[in-house]
Length: 117
Image 1 (cartoon, rainbow, N blue to C red):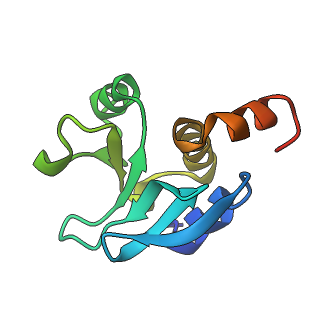
Image 2: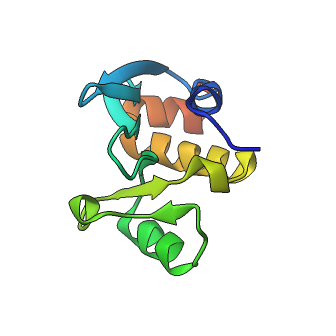
């Protein structure tokens, strides 16, 4: 089963203070107003998801068809994800990691202490 933007939103909004929004006139997800995911409408499509550069390199090197990049994203901490090729649990883990990168320090501290989970 291919995942949809609605699946992404459902998973992401399980995390504290995540809201649907827009970025570059496309559907996006933000935590406390800071974007960490967006649905690309460009020809290559996919979900652009914030990640650490080391994680991006590892995902691309894995050979998993779910992960790719374009020249536009070279050098940027975002991985592109083909929603037709990723399972729900792996996407949930990646969304959680992206949340930790984008969330403000106060919110991260609160979640780490159990107040925001």
